[in-house]
Image (tube, rainbow, N blue to C red; front, top):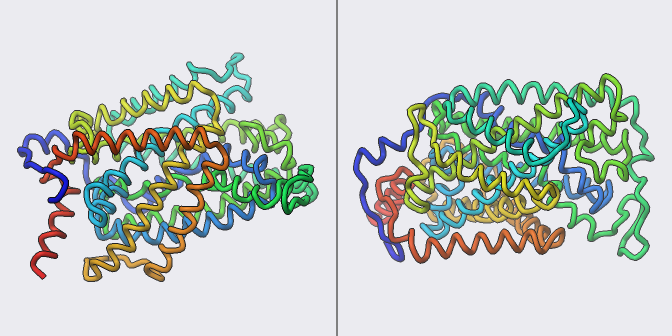
Length: 471
């Protein structure tokens, strides 16, 4: 294979890198998809009100929701055709070769390693607002979150996914309680109470920061859906993945669109867009911060944040596992324990996430995670288009409605979203770009000469190349 060197590993190598199979059906996968994202309903998105006002964030949400829905339809097809633990990396490896596969896997890993750090800071905000035992957000709250939930994952995926499903169900109940309570406080005037910036082009009460505010709000609109694309990472641990992964990811996206619209309108309408634009616990503050409903939402909001924190730990471990098993990252990261959980793939990115959480700047960390996500979306949508054109006869149990038109739309918006991360914070996005380049340099100088030919993801790609050579 041009530009890379591959070798075969022993059966013992692969036996030490086995995940538990058949532990999830489509309903658990749908729960996993919602779990990845549900924290975005409870905190983080509201910083987009500061960037674009209600109107700017609303427009951004409509565009981003359309992008995600189209992207999910594309990923449903790819995951049915290539069900492996690498997810986006597996898809891009088949379509774009080792360089494209590693670039996509790296972008996803940046997203999933950084997102828990942002969520940890929001967990700290919700814990502090509860006022229990005088607890304030800080490093030890973040550390406890990482240690406890990485520990649960080390116990095994079946138990972890089922616990995640229960936590997610509680979080959704909290959103219902919030919606019922917030309706009584809703005032249309609250949606547009941010004072327009007279110097901004197109500024109005609906777009207080003008047209540029729409663009700046895009990364925060993404927070409503970020990480739902991680559902295919569970493919190797799913019963009948060709059927269940597409069903699970589409069901998850449908639920997330409903919760996004509900939270955006009711939070800004009940608490005021201006007041909600800078707080860590917007749903609680929208209900006044006190009273039974606010307290209930506060406690349950903590469950929502934990659900996403818990499930994204799962996602980063599987992406790390897949890249390591195939030799792109150090192979020690993919060794699994007696419960078939990848030990170092859980611990090492967790340490990185904890160190990032110490900054306490959830909004900037969020933007960094969005950079990785948007870059991976660009590469995954290109992969779908390439495979549709180059391998039209590939077995696809599920086919994307609209084909490359659907994923082409998602690709264009993903490019816009990637650029938007530099609008919000050139420093944060620039740091992520530097990390991405460092990973690619590692691949160029070292790991591309040490790929494992008989890892599942590499075998998918080699099979395709062999079939193409016979035509």
